[in-house]
Length: 149
Ligand SMILES: [Zn+2]
Image (cartoon, rainbow, N blue to C red; front, side):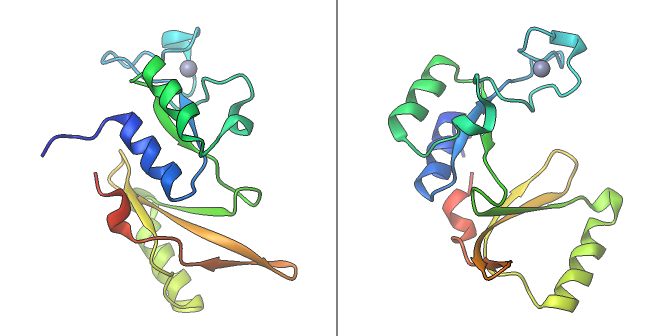
């Protein structure tokens, strides 16, 4: 199966309501595309846009333009309270699976959501949240099949 382009993935995220922005990329030699190059402390993991996460959008035209201009840009997703998106980084090298088991034993199973594999052999679960009084409630967002790559 052919791997989907980063533009296609960015558009898929936007289609389900996740605001995206282009991030710097990393060359095969591990050098960041930013002006710090090999001295970058976060290669491929920081915004390319002037206002960073504030530039994140679900606007298809803007997303097409970003990834047409730089097809290698990594895809960033705006998360947090303002975006209404909560991310669990499950890193098995640091006990992430056991932490998730404990969390679900205490609170019940997490709702169906988007799951992405990470470079470290773990995964991230992305859930939508809504405010209920002073609390944020995790709600179902979309099916995992929506972003199968
Ligand atoms: Zn960099």
